[in-house]
Length: 126
Image (cartoon, rainbow, N blue to C red; front, side, top):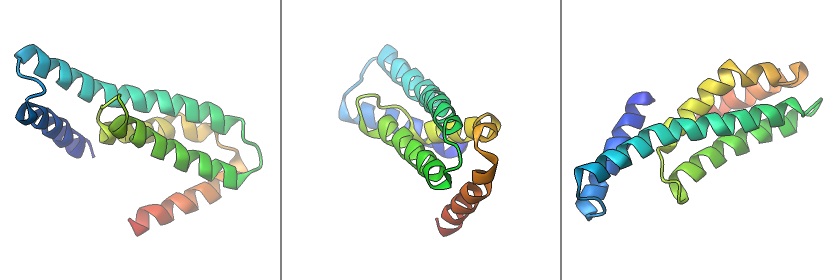
């Protein structure tokens, strides 16, 4: 996934160059830093919000599943389709890494199996 994220960062940079949005070296470097570092920072921010949100959900598997799904969707949507314009792929990868390292400990133990089953199905079907 990081390889895909890197490819998208360079694609976005070259697309801006082709459109004429940036023509100076400083503009290209600024866009590179914004896109390549902004995505992971957004993923960390959404991950921290999701972890806090999931920690507050007790005995509701459906709400936990919806929180993770909505959080992942919003992370990609904010990154790619709003004024933020950072790498959505890098944001989602960072969100996934954060949730697997920190966020999964905040999930209510009885909901963890249901959450894992749903995300396993989504992974299988995609």
